[in-house]
Image (cartoon, rainbow, N blue to C red; front, top):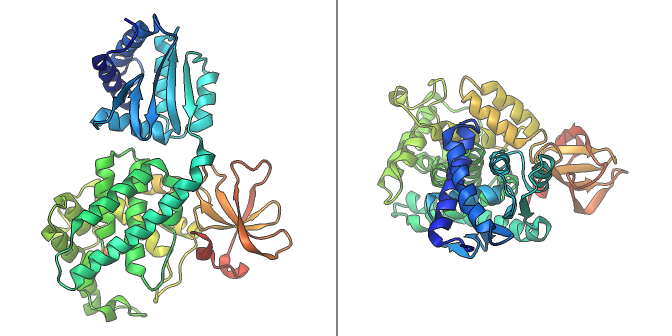
Amino acid sequence: MAELSLIQAQRVVLLLAGASKGVTLYPEAHPAVAQPLREICTIVGEALREKPAVRLGILDGVLFLEHHLFFTPTASVDELVEILTAREVRAVTFQRGLAPSELTEFVTLLSRRDLRGEALAAELARRGCAHVTVELEDLRQEEAEEEFDATATYRQAITVVSTLFGDIESGRIPSTEMLRGIVDRVADLTIREPSTLLGLAMIKDYDNYTFFHSVNVGILAMALGAALDMKKEELRELGMAGFLHDVGKTRVAKKILNKPGKLSPAEFEEMKRHAEDGARIIGEIEGVNPRVAQAVLGHHIGFDRTGYPPWALDLSFERSCDIIAVADCYDAITTLRVYKPPLNPREAVEMIRGLGGTQLDPDLVETFTGMLGRYPVGTLVRLDTNEIAVVFRPSSQGGERPVVKVVKDGLGRVLPSPVVKDLAREEGVGIVAVMDPALAAIDVSRYLE
Ligand SMILES: [Fe+2]
Ligand SMILES: [Fe+2]
């Protein structure tokens, strides 16, 4: 039988998703990994007796295996689309001669978050997997579109959050349809294009602090969730919790929210109520998962349980709560407020590290700071060409060579319009130093969009 039947195709997808998950939990020889791979080899091997290759991939967002298209999402289909997309793989071809060991190598490499695109293809070749070939996404062509898509989505998220807060403030019942739609889109982008969104999450707006802060926390939390391999449904919940985590501040007097100096004990007590007020407000909104309200209730509870509200200190909270706390802390300390100057990203990373184990979960801090990389977005740097640049996007290839916007040339002259350089693709140009934006008189935030 030459062609794979629909049932066989469905079986291969199910087994491949299972093995991809299994390999992150068990050694290769474990039955949870070895068994599905053996079965895939048998099914695909049978087809390969009659034809030279079997192809699996994604076309316009839909998973296909040979001529079978998987329009209906199932957990396995979603998982394969997620993992292939994250690894920048458009299709995989299994060729005649495929050995079980090659399939094992392929699934193992696919599970490695640090390998994608050309690096993944090179590693496959290096390990002698001659009968498994990956076709990569044409990133350069798609980058411009995705950049535009991400910026539009970011702006839309700000609008949705500000409308929702406005509704709540004026006693209207907010519609969650828009909110759910935007959270879904941001979750998709987080999986597909995490570095662009991470870059956008460093945009600040002094006058609309709450809305930008809420959206940024949602994005940072989703990015951290994705780095922890959380599933899309969990990412959606994280996004929702991030977007809404400070919704209780709609109940706090404006003069307290915007007070330039230190809050009095009574004012601080009122401010502290925003966590429980937020959870209550969310609990009243139709169609929002109660876990979102729970995460909001605990977003200031602290990893060491020294935060607030005091009556909730002994409750058990899920990890989403600690994730929101890390994202909240990073965005708050990198933002200028009436009562404090912002820290630059380098200093912020140091500070967050210092809070690991007390206020923040140390493991999450580790993953978060690892995700931001050595030169987080918003860092001002000097290149070895003597040019001054702002880190604009995390590295497209992982590692420590981010995308930068050059703002001053090698002679110290401000460029009329900044020039984007992807250091991962620029031979021989590297970062030599991190600079203080205040000393260099550069407003970094102007260059982040
Ligand atoms: Fe808060
Ligand atoms: Fe916050």
